[in-house]
Amino acid sequence: GGMAGAGIGAVVAGGAAFSLLSDAGKNKAGAATNTATLSIPDLLEGTTSDGTTTFTLEAKTGSHEVLSGVTSDTMGYNQDFLGPTMKWTNGDVVLLNITNSIGADTTVHFHGAHVPAKMDGGPQVAFADGETWSPTFTVKDPATTLWYHPHALGTTAQQAVHGLAGMIIVEDDTDTSAALPSDYGVDDIPLIFQCLAVDADGDIKYEATGYRESDVSFPLLLNGTNVDDTTLTFTATKTRTRFRCLNASPSDIITIQRSDGGNLTQIATDQGYLAEAADVTTIRLVAGARAEFVLDLSDDVTLQAVVTTGWIRGGSGTFDVLAVTASGTDTVDDLPSTLNTIDRYDTSDFTARTITLGNSGATMLINGSAGTSMDSMAMISTTLGSKEIWTIKNSTQLEHSFHLHDVPYQLISINGEDPTGVQLGWYDTYEVVGGGSIVIAMEFTDFADDTYMYMLHCHLLQHEDEGMMASLMITDDGSSSTSTSTDTSDS
Ligand code: C2O
Ligand code: CU
Image (cartoon, rainbow, N blue to C red; front, side, top):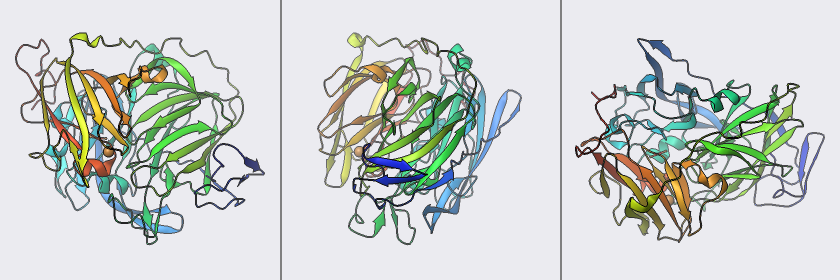
């Protein structure tokens, strides 16, 4: 919505927001702010038979108004831009029939899902225009918010920024899930943020360089709607409302906060529930990351998104993105005092590795290798059951992040500091600042394969495409007690 003056000085009267600070944004101080209803991505209905739930997706081309008044060529799953939300249930078997109609190779990666490497949608399983890819697996994730997006070599940014992205909600039968709002679109609300780069003709940009001086705007979208000069509205009919935030931007960091500086009750990170709910004033999401929070709405609340300049965005600023009207009159119980049991890893006997994020000019590297092809990228080899502690070292002065496929990780240290608060949850994508480092720990369970690999990479998509990606081969050396052959997808 309207550019609000860095959290202070924003005066809202009669539906119009006036910014008293001139920030680096496009919105003129004093300009009236438009409103529009928050659009909620459709829920994709699956069909269940013989214990398998089947979903049908088509990656296709379309057109969409990304910049107000300008139509862009876009892509989406089953629609012109973005994709429907899928609901998976822990323990169920899912089958996805995904048809490629975009005119180029693609893959569909289930970001954050614990699935066999062959089903994970990495570059090795790219499929051509006109083909259908049909991965199937048992859902092994706890209740969480995941997402799906393309992951073919060199084209991930291009395809994702054009709109190939959607949310996955995993449900489970825990007491915590039962106690939380889960009525999709009613009291369980997806918020998909995208900062894009678009030229005056509506061409959506994905290259890392070469246009920052040119006529390019950097719109912020929420659930596909441009919110540069529009504040979206949502009428909460329930007192307690749950918000699932996904930063689907190619590069920018989004921080979510309330315009009144009040608390958001964060309940989940990338990979499921926190041990206990945490009252926080801001939730900072690097590109690719997710978080969930609840609000007990006794009064109206306006949510803001603070965009922090990443690789491509030309400006930063604070936007009033969503005005939530509190209309629920129901009473709510206290949240469960414990949401999840998170046993912190004792890493003393974990296998240690160092992963270095570097660059050589515009070529992005992991451990000195450019991951622009499966052959050129660095490969981490390990065995099923391995417990590891990795130092992710950013040897550049650029902002990066670190995303690991397959299993969640715990943060052991962040730039030399012990994690606290929500940093004690489970993650799959985390910030690694220029010159900084994070130490993470994980355990490789369930899936081994001597052909298909998982990926690890920076989730700034241009960096990933330019080589900041490595592969992870997990083989079964026979000493692990975990079977790899029980999954239905092993075919
Ligand atoms: Cu969301 Cu390997 O990516
Ligand atoms: Cu990066």
